[in-house]
Length: 111
Image (cartoon, rainbow, N blue to C red):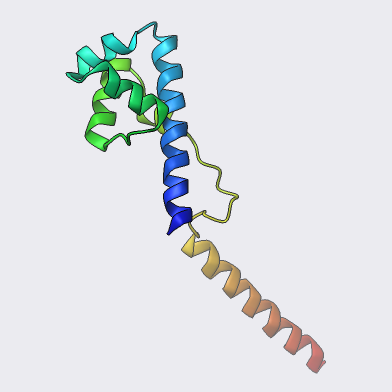
């Protein structure tokens, strides 16, 4: 459980860093973004530090204000860390190929 919480925290920090970077490239202050969102600039600060998690509705509003795509803020997460979602069809294909190879081996050994 601890690891999951730590990872969620790391993700919040990464999202916050991207949020800040995008806001700065748009030349907007925390105050301007806060006003547009109807929240305090302290809240924007907490989002950027990763102290507070951004809900999906808030993320959508932030994207509208920053004219950014959600993926720009969420970012790409590496899929080679063992957390990638298995492709079921690929797995089935690999299993079928394995079976076929074994059958071919058995048949070739008969000759």
